[in-house]
Length: 300
Image 1 (cartoon, rainbow, N blue to C red):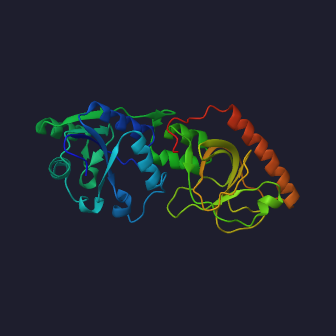
Image 2 (cartoon, rainbow, N blue to C red):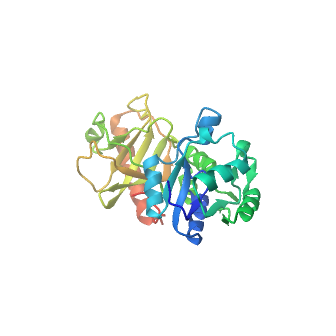
Image 3 (cartoon, rainbow, N blue to C red):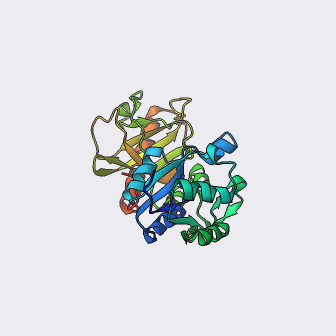
């Protein structure tokens, strides 16, 4: 629970993309501490029984908020889903959370069925003497930035568009697990990571990427998919870290996807696969060295 006399940001904050960041920046205009209202479960999980694929783990979301000086305030959506917009404002935002200022986006909705909007919130705030700051909608390629657009971009392999809307490279930091060590036999040792259920899956294929080990960043090439030449049924992220040698088993290593290079392909032999990986690695290195990469808001 945030302390009384704080500025509370309202929104989904499921991707912490540019639109969410606009709202969070508005908390700088409010009094006292800064906080963001987060639901313990995505509203869709409560209303429809299924959540949209996650763009961030809970841990990464909290890490980004902490870097921006934002305190998370958690609320169980199932306990407020049936409240009218007016009741949500008075019972939750005022009486329970005691927010003295609020921030939201132009397209913010709240209350049962999402019937409340930013205009109604402004009216309620004015009547209650609560300050309200409404952030401008972030735009990309002529349309509002949204988590849904980012998911679609990732699933289509349009990583530059996804990263532009996120304001940082799309990344993940799952535990490195033991693989079959075929990469070593192919002269390209790799780290293997599996995505948890419910996390967004990018398009199967090969990516130019960047890997954070300790405080250093290394160019890399990542394959996400089922490795058709070898033949596996479970999708995984398999990354060859260029210019790095070391044992990373059991560690949570952060991989940033930067550019889709090509689809997965079934090669006639392991030698042909090795030659393709060499070409992919060269293209990935060139991309990482030449690209202007959004890094200020990267998850560490």
